[in-house]
Image (tube, rainbow, N blue to C red; front, side):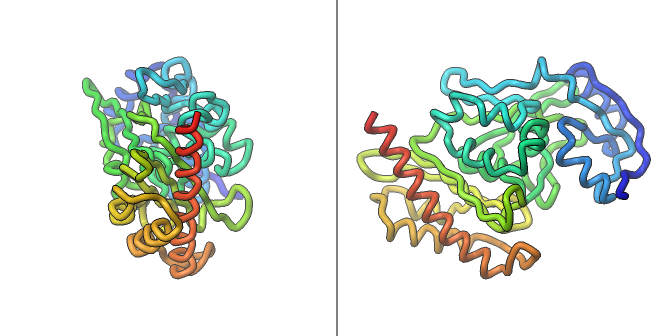
Length: 292
């Protein structure tokens, strides 16, 4: 039976108290929210915090999904099912609903938190790639300070982020809803990590793709953004050949390794195919919304 190494336990009653505990206890303290990211790593001894700070009772401060003045705001303790059940997500950010339906199983979606999944830094985690596609940003709190980090600047490497040891992620924001978006994933079995998955969000103008963002999951040492593929789409009329070329460019930008989920070349092939499919679906959704 796998059990974590010994650790001390603290419980925070407010965001301010959680941040103060992080400051006082130092880098060997870890926050615990839903626990579906940290606890499995502790059982495998891949993480061994000396102190665990329980923040799951901060729902009153950090559990919400809402849109204010066109800005989507998701509190760090919002559960995956909160995102799935949100009307504004379903209507204006279908990429997030796509991604959430593919995360693990109902138990994880009922208890796992958005903030925990984003802050964990797992390169195979779905939500970071979805938020990269959406141009999201995270709000973090530290002792006497608050700052905002673009989400594609958050990830530095496997399980490594630009958060300071005394900082806590409190909110994920999406400044603007896209015209169309989609998330597509290939997994060995339902609920598994991705062999590869792709998030696409775009804006349309005059029948052309005005702007696009592409997030890639499971095909690098961290969450990736396919900037070259994005550039190839801007100012172009949508169509199968354009999608194919963007998929080729994204495959070149991916950095997969061979593992139990497939060879590196297989994963590149998935990127080629999934980018084209996600673009087609995102354009269809944009056209559908535009026709309303």
